[in-house]
Image 1 (tube, rainbow, N blue to C red):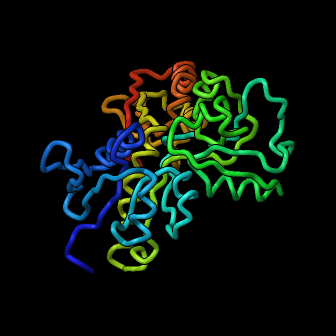
Image 2 (image 1 turned 180 degrees about the vertical axis):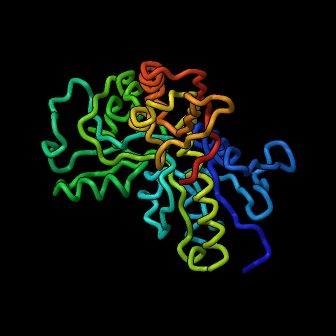
Length: 291
């Protein structure tokens, strides 16, 4: 294996870039830039970040310019390049949809007539989607402002990304169907993964990132509970493999119960524990969690 760091291609701007950098930092890989607006940064001793456009990241990996990267599943699908998905990072959720003018009579995509003009910055995905429906279309590639195309007579419908649908509504468009759903993914060059040393480092990185993602959905709960109600407590906070029970000094009738709980169940869990007589309940965030 080369002595150079393993290159990680990251988005160079936007919300996806911010979330990716935040995730890496929480995993203990804070980027160290040599200068403001630098396009390269070190990520610890073994990794080096390079910052490029999201749509170019699959290309960088496939061409061997980087070993791993973070980009949307939509960009991976559009590129058609040979890369391997390692981990669904969960953030950057959006959908690629077919949308038409609000006054259009089209209710379902299958009702679109042959020769329909489709404006999109995802020509590969759009072509495959309509081919699967058996509808011959005419694709108008665009690089931006896709929403305006139907109103200018450039296209009949568009295939574009949306997260909430608000941008479509602002431009008097409505969704007709969903082509694919997308989130940010950790992807890798297959040849790099086949290298034992690089493959091991990438797996260690994926484990670290996943531990941060898993921890975000959990909380660590501690409470003093009556010893004679432990079986009931176990049902309330089963934890990962049962709650950890610790003896309380000079507390013959009390023990301390520690457990990992779902973040969205904290309110209910505390209420149930209070009903069992629990005291001194403490809930904290978890930075990383590896089962």
